[in-house]
Length: 456
Ligand SMILES: Cc1cc2nc3c(=O)[nH]c(=O)nc-3n(C[C@H](O)[C@H](O)[C@H](O)COP(=O)(O)O)c2cc1C
Image (cartoon, rainbow, N blue to C red; front, top):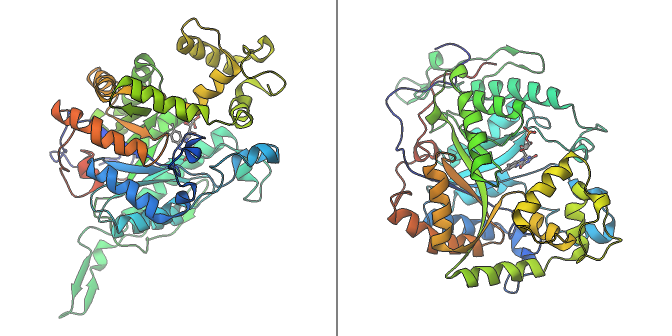
C-alpha cells in the first residue's frame, strides 16, 4: 500500500443499499426559538442527562450516530448586547466531554464531535478521540473543521483567522499526522503476558518521527489502538479545498443542499475525487442535512412549525439575516425586502433561493428570517411522516445521498417524532436497518476497516 492511500482491507465491506442516519444535536434544538416552546426546559441544555436521553432515543431508532458541532468562540459577539442576550446558543458544554458521558449511557450509537485543526494540535486530537473510541468500544467520530471565524482567532492570540489556503494546507498535514498517530499500536500489540512479564510486543509499537511544514511530532501515541481500526473521520467542507480534503481523508461528509439537483452535484463532485487517493465510492458516506418537522398529519406538522416560527424574536431574526442583507432594523418586518438589501453575490444566491421558496409570493423580511431560522441553511421538510419518508427515499434512490443528517429544530421533540413516525416507514420500505449490523460505528456505517495510512 502506498503512503497516500487511506486504504481498506478488501472483502470486509459492511452492509450496503441502506440509508445512514445521523442526528445533529445543539442544546434543545437548532431553531433559535426552540428554548421558548411551552414544555421545553431551556436549562436542559446545560445537563448531561438531556443529551443522554436524546442519544438513547436516537439509539432506539437505530441511528448511526449523534453529532455535536462546535466552535471555540462566541461568533456572534459582534452583535449588540440586547440582541446577543436573545440568542440561546452562545454558551455550551464542550462536546467531547458530553460524548464521554453519553458513551456510558448508550451502547451502539456513534459519537461524533467537531474539533478544529486550526486551534488544536494533532497529538491532542489523536489522544482525545482515541480515548473516546476506547471508552465507547469503537464509536468515536471526529468532525474535522478548519474554523472560519475571526472570533475564534481572537481567543488564541491572533487578530484574524488564518487564510483559507493556509488553513486547508495545515488541515491536510494535520489529519495525516493524526491518522498515523492512531496507527502507533498494532491491534494485537498488548500481550498482557503475566508469565513472561511482557506487557506489550515492542515490534508492534511504531514511532512517527513526523517533520512537515506545520508540525513536528515524534510519537508514538500514548493511547491504545482503536477498536474500529481508527476513529471515523467526518468533514463538511463545501469548497474545492474542502471537498479535496474530504476525498483524501473523510469517511463521512456532511452536506448542505436545498434541492436534489444541488445534492447530486455535490455528491458526484466528492465521489469523483476518490480514485485519486486509492479509494472507492463506498469508502465515503455523504449525508446532506435536513431539518424535519414531522406530524401525524400535514396540518399537525404545519401547526408545530408555525408555533416555533412565531416565537422568533424579530430582533434575533434580523440578526440572523444581517450577514446576507445587512441591517434591516429600520424597516417593518412585514414589509418586502428593500431593494437596497438585495445586492451582491451572496444575496443573489439567497434571493434566488427565497424566490423558489416563496413561489411567486412577495418576500417579506420576516419570511426571510423565518426561512434562515428554520433550517440553518439545511433543507426544511414540514409534513406527515409518509411525506418526509418519501422525500428521503427519493434522494436516496436517486443516488444523491448515502444517508441524512437530521438537524433537529427542537429536542427531544424532533427525534421522538422521527423515531416514532418516520423510522418505521423507512424500515418497512427496506431502506433502513431494524437493528445494528455491527458493534462499532465503522461497521454500522458499512465502512471497511482501514489498514493504510493517510500521507503525513
Ligand atoms: C452539517 C455541517 C456541520 C458543520 N459543523 C461545523 C462546526 O461544528 N464547526 C465549524 O467551525 N464549522 C462547521 N461547519 C462548516 C464546515 O466545516 C465548512 O467550513 C463549511 O461547510 C464551508 O466549507 P469550506 O470550508 O470548504 O468553505 C459545518 C458545516 C456543515 C454543513
